[in-house]
Amino acid sequence: MLDFFKSLFKPQGSGATAKERLRLVLLSDHLSLAPETIDALKADLFDVFSRYFEYDASQAEVTFDHREREVAMLASVPILRVRERTLPPVALAPVAVAVAPDPPAIAEPEPELEPVEAEAVEAGPAPVAALEPEKLPIAPAAPRPRKRRRKRNAAASNGKAGVQPGLSAGHSAQA
Amino acid sequence: MEAIETEITAPVPEAPVGEQPVAPLGRAIVITSGKGGVGKTTTTANVGAALAALGKRVVLVDADVGLRNLDIVLGLEARVKYHVLDVIENKAELDDALVRDKNVDSLYLLAAAQTREKEDVSTEAMIGLIEQLRARFEFVLIDCPAGIETGFRNAIAGAGHAIVVCTPEVSAVRDADRVVGLLPHDWKPELVVNRLRPALVRKGKMLSVEDVDAILRLPLLGVIPDEPGIIIATNKGRPIALDEHSPVGAAYRQIASRLAGNDVPPPTVKVAEPGFFSKFGSLFGGR
Image (spheres, each protein chain N blue to C red):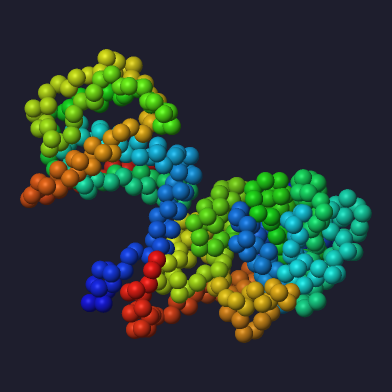
């Protein structure tokens, strides 16, 4: 009972904040990756997932598990439905430097791949960017303005009443 | 040079295979942290004093050239005549530079040079000096300077073992993690969590020993609670490890006992169960 009231009134202690900050800072120390790069990685991973599945974006998460002297990447993506047709790869936008004041204008709008907003079957062949797949620039992706879109999508997905996350795909890869 | 590579873990190791029937070399342990101000020097002084109080022959080497402090913590500042560099540069005999502690007989100090720079010490000279000391003492504790540059490299050069001191703070843990990565890979550094405040941990306002441990993943050598007594002891220049009544002193004595090879139960911290009123109070506590 007391615990219940505590959970209502007491904010999470700053010790937990310290722990989480430490976890993240060590992660990037060990991977030599900037936090923005990790965010960009997550965005890219979810883009790939969304080609094959509709997933519950509000529950999807990518975490990094700190082990002995290494970090393992764990993606937990609750799958709502398998797409009837796999969507084409997302055309990688030309890498925009995060700090550049004027990012180069991206000629092509990114294909709308998100579930809920566009039904998978209706999506049809998305406009593929002018680049051939094998010529796609394989460069560390700079943070792209994706977060907003996914948040909106997460909200939409939450609004869908009665949908239970079906599968939970655990994918582990050594980082 | 090969003798330095030999890690001696037992208090009475088997005699080295060689012609001269010398006494077994002592253990050279560097006390390091990366971050400054987490209690390396205090730990060095207190673990050293506690080891000596157990009857071990101990020498403390201040490797923080230019920022000498170990003499102050031990209350020996007035007795220092020569320092590490004097010995290395053959300006003084080792025996003249070793300062005997005023509290414990078998404890000695080799002070750092205060007016010199860390770059003035060569790694080879440091290795040679530590080897010399290992031949004469059972424990050579090296007080490492903060940072990961020349001073750090020299301090770890002659050692075969490391104690990593860390406070329950994000910055200290991060730096400790960095330092562990810079130590030789075959070392098994041991962790001392310093300045723990159990009351804060209980309220979730401080990283716990488990939190720190989960990240650094080092064998836990000791946990030192935060207590005003340590400041008073440092003011007086008498290691708190010699204070029978202090919990901090007891924590240091446990570490020493463990290093001396005694079977000591794992370090614990008294985290008192919160009473009803403190529970009630925490409802209104801020973060």
